[in-house]
Amino acid sequence: MYLDLKENKPHGTKDDPFSTYHIWNNGRPFQIPVHWHDELEIIYVKSGLLTVSISGESYTGKSGEAFVVSPGSLHFMGTQNGNVEYFTFLFPLKYISFRTDDTLDDKLLEPLSSGHLMIKPRIGDVAKELCGQLIEINESESKITAQIKTKIILLQFILEMWNKEYIIENDISGRNTVEKEMLSYIQQNFSGKISLKEFGERFHLSEKYISRYFKEHFHITLSQYVAYLRLEHAKQLLQDTDIPVTEIAMQSGYQNVSYFIRSFKETYGVSPLKYRKIR
Image 1: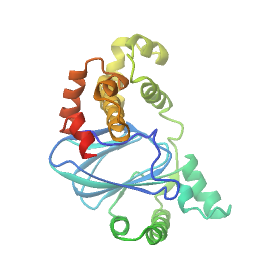
Image 2: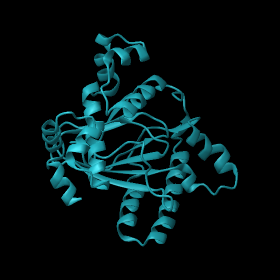
Image 3: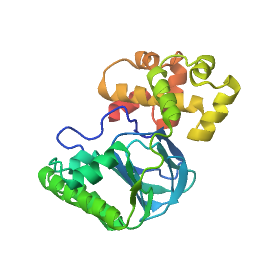
Image 4: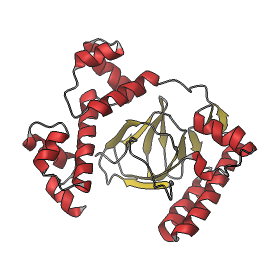
C-alpha cells in the first residue's frame, strides 16, 4: 500500500501552510518510502503499532506516542502486521514565528529550521493531549479559528519540547548528503530507464553493490522505489488531468500499458480509470 508523500510537492497552501494527514492501513502492510522535507513533522500514533525510521534510527510507536522529524531529516514509516492509525502534522517553523527577529526566532526557530538544532525524534506520550487537540480543531473549527488555535498549540508544543530538554544540538546535520542526492537523482529520472552502470558511476558504487546499499539504507529496493515514484506520478496525473490512461502510462515510465494497469490496481486496489472516477 502506497500513500501520498514526496516531498517535491508543497504541503498545505500559501494561506495555510499547516497540513494534517490521517493514515490507516486496514490490516495491510505498507511502507511509505524514505523522504525528507523542509517542514517540521509530528507523527502521532492513534492506535496500533507504527515503525518509524528517522535519520537512520528505527523506533516502534504505540497508541498515544509521537515522534518528531526535524527539517531535512531522512525518514520513513510503515507496519508489517496488524492495524495502525496515525496522524502527521507538518508545518514550516516560520508558521509559528512572530517574524520580529526576537530571541525565539534567533535562538530557537531559525536554528531548528536550518538544522543547527533538532528535536529528539522519540518524545513518547508527552504530546498526546496537544496532538488530540490538533486533530479535533482541524476537523471541526472554522478556518480562521482553526489557524489561531493551531498556532497556539504548536507554540505550546515547542515550549513543551524546550522544557523537557528535547531540543538539542544537531550532531547529524549534514549527514545523509549522498543518500539525498541518490533519491533526488531517481526522482528526476524515474520516468526513463535508470541504468545501474550510470547510477553506480555517479555515486561511486559497483553495480553489484547498488541493490544491497539501497536496501540497507532505505529499507526498500531500487526497483521498488522507482515503481513507487512512477505510480505516484500516474496517480497525480489521473487526479489533475484528462490525459488518456495510455499516455499517462508512457509519461510515468511504463512501456507496457497492461503492466501499468495491473501494477496500479495491485497497489491502490482499483484500476486507473476507476481511480479517476472516484477522485
